[in-house]
Image 1 (cartoon, protein in one colour):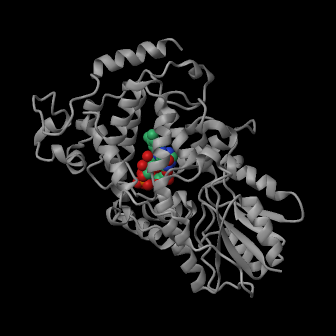
Image 2 (tube, protein in one colour; image 1 turned 180 degrees about the horizontal axis):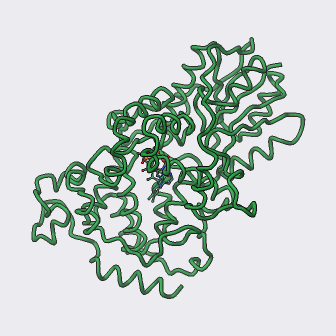
Image 3 (cartoon, protein in one colour; image 1 turned 180 degrees about the vertical axis):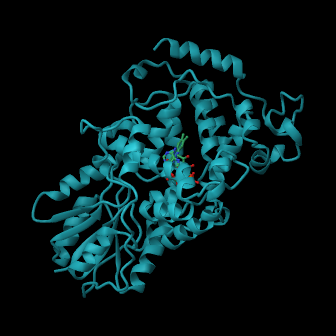
Length: 455
Ligand code: FAD
């Protein structure tokens, strides 16, 4: 009997336990279901559709080159998989385990009946349900989670991709990828995204490019004007490379000095841990008291929100970040923190509006990573920066030497030299076409603190 490998956010062949198990079992087909129903409001966002198109193209080619095949279907995952299993007389579905609530729900539905769903770990450094406190409970705070996770490291050696794959004979219908309409008309990312190569090979190239600068990660990671981080996040989200591969290659290169970067991979695991134990984390405050927060609503808030999304707040570091996001589907981590904090605290707008915007515009949008980081910045989460710690964009910008980054992403400011770049209006300049700050720092800070004092 043939079996099925159900690909989701694990679009790779190397170090893929589901692929290895299916190959050992006999013939199999790979299936990707574009499921816009199961996830409800968390259906894949716009920027990631672009990525998905290219990643599926790469996966299909890699499978065909080994004698395998990839079947594409659209609909509700359990229904599609059941029907397909009947059609090809398969009894077993192999899949990598994921922690988003909609994937867990689909797995539960699939597990009943005569089909066997076999789930494998491998998209995290360690399965979060196995990283436990001394009392065998789950962690809600990162630092002890990281300590416990490190005790389980290094991960096992990654398995290579199978050389050859046996596929069942006979015709199996597949949608044509082009008909899914995943490529957006605007912005023209195909031209503007020269920085990305979606797919497994692209992920390994990104790692190869990053390893030589890993030595400087700790000094450079907070400086948006420098290419000091790996940009592996979309590859990791789509599972094009396994975290075990990253861990072992980084640790081999640097031993102890690799820790600051490996710790970020630990954050990724921790975020999966949080949404595993708190599945509604993307929609609800981690701490209930925040349900009473009087976020701004109405026309003025909508106008400010729009200015934020368009990169027209008058705060150069925020605007550069929001424009980088729109142009490339990515934003530097330090700038994500500043831009998110600005929306939540300076504009007093509910963090969930920003989270949604990121969901639609980031190529690395990830339910756990996005929600945990937004709630961390907002101060509403289980592990959070206190709300009262309000980032000052005009201080952060020179502190992290963001001048080059601003000149690159805000063309109206490209000619401004020296420190004035961080706060042109404050320096007495009125650059053509660039708005003055939509709110003053001190006034915004006071408003935010007053609102949060009510909680
Ligand atoms: P590197 O610095 O090279 O780090 C390596 C990997 O570690 C990353 O690829 C990522 O998988 C993981 N990582 C790094 N930082 C974090 C973090 N703080 N939390 C969780 N994992 C981390 N990351 C996403 O992948 N998806 C999101 O939707 C997302 N939304 C965010 C929203 C906000 C408001 C903030 C402040 C951060 C968000 N992040 C998100 C985390 C972080 O900004 C990105 O993971 C990072 O910028 C990706 O760049 P990199 O691959 O060069 O990271």
